Image (cartoon, rainbow, N blue to C red; front, side, top):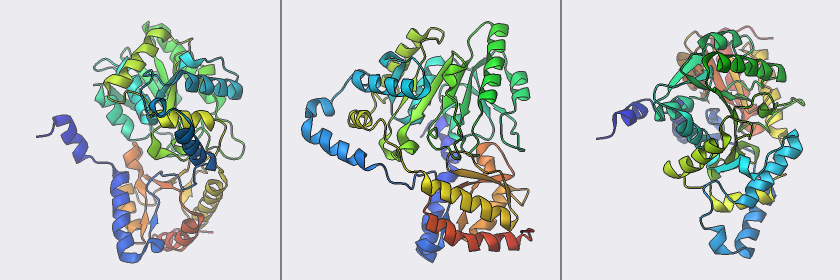
Length: 398
């Protein structure tokens, strides 16, 4: 018999994954080109060529015992040094290898942080809408999720409510910018206001409140939009970074956590994170991929396809009468459901072979998430289906 905690997780299996499986079934019936699956945030742009070249070069030329062997649980020292210098060059920071811990993607990074800082019933605040797995990560360590109501006008954080909801039990605020599912990027002004609120509350309650910045979409920003580097605004900040989206490597599970030296008790926290890597069973980030990242530290994916998809989808949907804000980053569009019940709307969309994810899965009912990390051809082919969907709901388009 499975544990009570796992019973709950099994019963509430990811809606995104369910939609993905539904898409596979529909493809068998109608053909892949006639099913428009916008459910999964799986990068559709190939990884830079240098990634594969580096894998071959490392495997062929380097000592295999080292390439495939253990290292410090925090990761190879030379890899961490390369990453710290890269961050410093980009953001004018002053990190060293001692501020970097290599992890198995952003999910692992968040989990080792929560494992290290949470006591039972400690509260972690999130801004709705948010990535649904945060609930599971926090509950893994008997923490309590405090969800701040969504600002459905522009999806910037509801800072007035944030200040009211911070309590003596608050241990951390977990943010995600560029945001999944809205595509919103928090401005410098917004980050500074968040920092001011947290500083004020730290002083009021006499204990540290951590800011955890989940940044797998940092490099996916459009129209020259800047993504502020959060450690510049608040000392007690963890930055969690993944190469899953920035280099199209979601299956490789490679990323890092930044722990600034200015953080309260940073040395002990760094040790705790390193040990959490081991005790949670990750042990260390994949050794081969660490070395690949070191060689490909300056590589980028070409965002042209995502940007083309973003503009085509946003312009077309608004022309058809749907309501949404234009995403600034990531590869998601958060659209208002024309039907009050977003789950019912997603079922309606399936009648036209369109697979969307209800916003209620992200703590924001009345909206749906559309992942536009698909081929541009898929976007183009889907537009007639979206138009038929709009017409069936008697939306007033342009």
